[in-house]
Length: 165
Image (cartoon, rainbow, N blue to C red):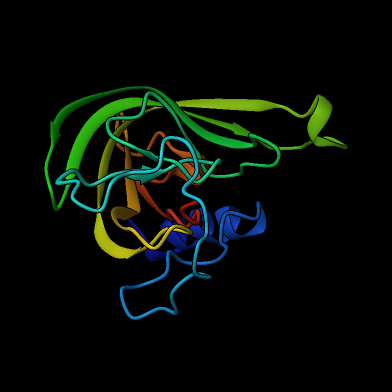
């Protein structure tokens, strides 16, 4: 696969507003004292690595992962997981990408791709209640068959950067 193809996909993802604020690390400032824990907050003693969803909730083995929470423009769905560990997870599913073409997202052309998914690059940080959560921060999609992705890409890598609630 050429560097040009990978770069085109990464730049496209950046243009879609995929990038954002990275999950805070363990050295981040603590939340305000007495802050209430939101419903569904992952416990500090959790031994599962999670994906932070659009609502800031830690989810184990999600059926979908949205990379554009406000618009749903870029979403992995129909996810099934063949492995889920502390440091990585692998599975398969579909990628839906609303191109927002020809004029706007509400009537944009939606492209769909079959993918293999790998989650890795973990980070641990505090929730708003001060509990610590470990989450995957990188998703790598391999298009099936290879070369069937946007701009003929074999793979594309995305940052998972939602903040825990």
